[in-house]
Length: 243
Length: 206
Image 1 (cartoon, rainbow over the protein chains, first blue to last red):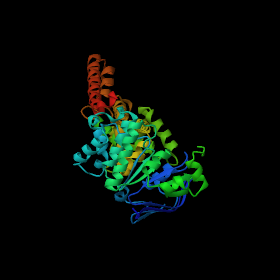
Image 2 (cartoon, helix red, strand yellow):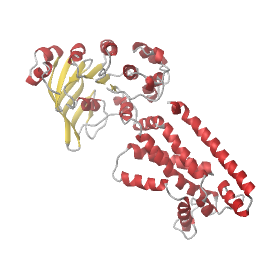
Image 3 (cartoon, rainbow over the protein chains, first blue to last red):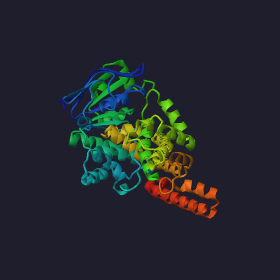
Image 4 (cartoon, one colour):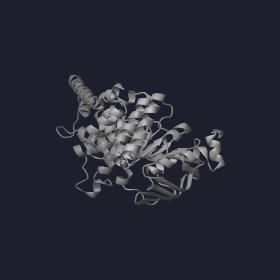
């Protein structure tokens, strides 16, 4: 778990004159679950978009495996396809659940993924809804489709942007069990953005606190919650931070 | 002939509409304003423009190139009909793609789509509206009379089309024939639109 998968150095992200992210250094290790916590607007989702190479950094470098990405150098398609994101509010295609799950495989020109699709649909509990129109699903079911369409790609890195926000306990439990299994059995490196500190504590190996686009502290989960080194982390953990 | 004009309008209009709907660039609003003007362009003015461009003393006709169609030919009529229809296709396509959830593009890119694959996914999501754009273009072409009369000349067995034939027969007092041609034109339009409706598939029921 110690090998570095991502390494960010002096990364900033600006929209016009507004700087939303400024990370001096961040390492994401192979096979870990890293939870990103922090108030709304702290830059967590922006960081995920950078890690999925959906946006380039305004400055600095992102090292992923052996490739270096900076404002002038975009990642190859092959590299980009090793990372995928489950978004907080999934937008599903106007197709069946099955076709939505198959979509990512089709993008990669894979025609024979029926076994994989059936397997992930089984795991997310959507076999009975495989032929249902994805747009007719409930929020929890839609989020499970979003997870299934990411899982079927067997990514090296799974980025999750508040995947259980507003979901009922059943769906939260199901998604958390899948994230844990993927990490343990497939070695999927996971970066999880969450507002739920209990979830971060349940799932993550390490936790990072972002405030105003900057990383305040990154620590092993136990140290983060029990012996935070920064007073702002301590305030966050005690629930005293207003956001 | 109308089919070729519609195909050309579709080939030009859908990518243009998608580009205007999905990208932001300096001058985009001006391009949209020009396109909106094109959507409401009087066909006879388009006919006049094409006539002046293609006439032997016009800027294009005077070049004498094989690729430039001559006046009073079906090819000249195709040019006029395409100019009438492609802004309609582009305008409705732009509106349709702008109606798709903007997060869709980001999410399909996140699943590993290339930029082209993401654009195609958005067009597929907007297919109801995109097909309406083609229907609108088809309507603009099939109902058009002024431009094709000007640049085609309504020559029998060559550039006479249903609409210009209806005008001619009405002027000659052959109302029965004019009405019959009108019914044929309406029937053609109905069945063509029925075919396009099938392309929209189940999306209309959602």
